[in-house]
Length: 149
Image (cartoon, rainbow, N blue to C red; front, side, top):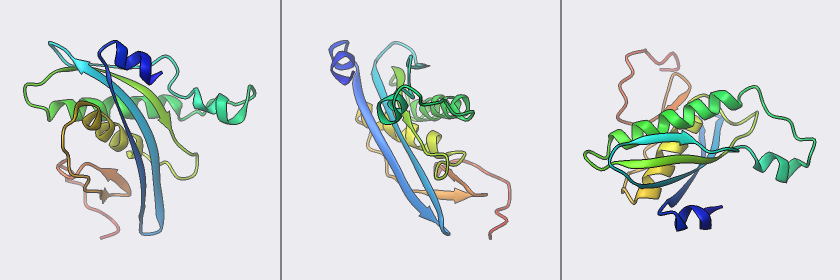
């Protein structure tokens, strides 16, 4: 798929999050394709979870969390695009890999933002911050107190 995307002027970025914070594993892997545009546009590809069929065969089932992860990925890409100040891209979330046990709210969003930055060649420092049990981008404002201290 990445060959087709590159042929259409898209550049592909992939980011794999593997992190442990206070014994809690955070995992997500997201692939985003992007190409320059006159405005920012973000969409989900037709089958971001098709890897499940490749990995588990024709009886693979979708997860009830799939729509949540798609929404997180789209949100992460939008946040990443907002940081590009005057550079605009058409972005497509091509693939989302997660696990039922190790992927938590915020993980896909975080990985998607970094995948977009890789696709467009934006040098972004990967500083992982956990607030209220969620992995967040370090410059996000979060006024909620962290119960873990």
